[in-house]
Amino acid sequence: MSHQHFSDVMGRWFECDGKALRRGDSAPSLCLCDICGVPLEQGDHGQCQNLVELVSCEEHRDEGRRRIVAAEMEQAAAFQEAAYAECMKTTEGTPEYYQALEGFILLLFPDCNPPTTVLPEAQRPEAPPDSAG
Image 1 (cartoon, one colour):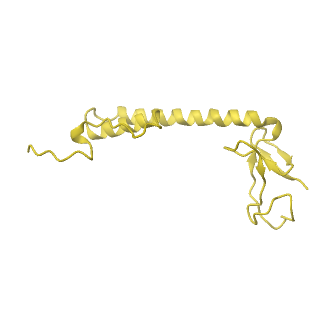
Image 2 (cartoon, rainbow, N blue to C red):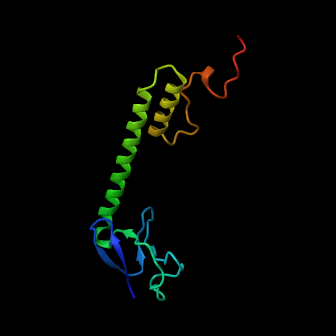
Image 3 (tube, rainbow, N blue to C red):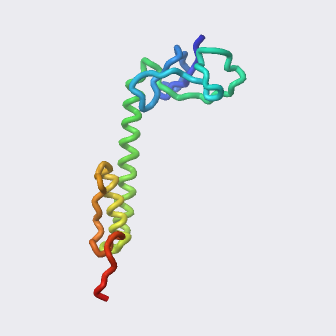
């Protein structure tokens, strides 16, 4: 007994043999019913109102992966552009500017651990209050 998925690459229905490669997975996994949790290849799921799962058919799997990577890179670039625009519309030297700049840097270098702050020491939240006043 087979079931169908909708190809996110070709835009058509295709027969599935019970396992599909899902986004983020390195190997195909069992197709399960969204409602009852039983494998789609077992039992009658006519009464279960399963959602349509978008996956790439085996013959177009590499193209599907390529499109996902391209879309993720495009989204990352859009976030970077928006963060840079936010930084540029603030007045340099203000706390808002440094906050926007820090957000932009964290988008560029997400693995920065711990994140480097660009705020001057006196403006950092963890800085002790200025006692010279």
